[in-house]
Length: 353
Image (tube, rainbow, N blue to C red; front, side):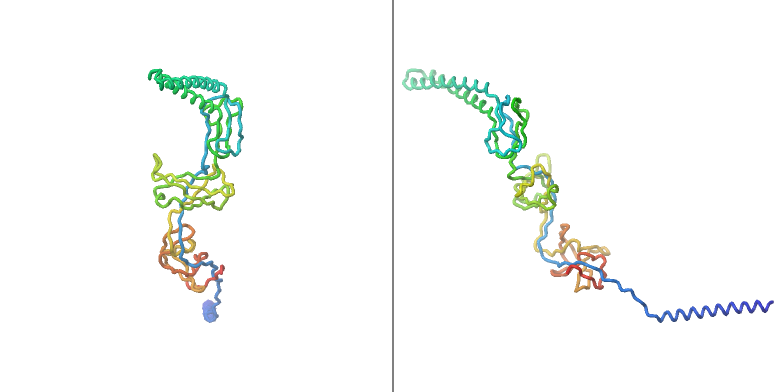
């Protein structure tokens, strides 16, 4: 029995030794097999050239499009409307008759004043002749003169009151509202007609203390009206207040808006981009070309198709282009897309050449 157990143990040991030897031989054989490397495709990148240019930064202002001139016509006297001569949307000249008020009472007052004036003038002319001949006293002459002056003032006032019954336009433009009709009582409590001159448009808004020293009259600006177009319209700074508006810390500014096709309408909201900073003759690249790595600002520069990661210092950045103050030279080829995947020294595939 003991011999059988010893034989089994020997058999197990032999098997273990055989397996160990076989494993060793397998490992030795495998160590001599060639290593198969998996070749990766090069990173696709787009590039640009670092260039000297003028760099602008802009700041937004919000405002409403206003007509360059507008008028709310309120009659100088209250009265019943007897005729209306304009309609909504009519284009009218300055001085155009808009509507008429009942003239009955005013005409009666004017006729009475005219009669009084005519009599006073006859009396004054007669007194002047007699006074020059020494036939009447100075007191009598001055009395006639006073009566004539009073009658003249009364006639002028009555004439003005009568003329107020013919309500005319103070400006040239389009009729934007008509709030009276024949038979209505026109009063001085609300505009009867409104008119806007939209031959030119402008935006009235304000500048902050930071911007007021950076913007000047005559500057060109871009005007964005999202309800009309994604592309900007052209504008020009017409005026800037030298002092803040009362009770505020902002400075009023007026911006003229070009409207060659007539598609911009008064009342629309607009965003104005004014130039808040400007640098000339600076080295620029697209802002997308700059990235952070290990806490440093980097740019991937290509020599042929081999990249180097260069540490740079940036200056003015307007969100599209960025100033490079150190680390690059004019003419350097810079990666602007795919640079996050670039490995220094490993060739890349340039896709925009």
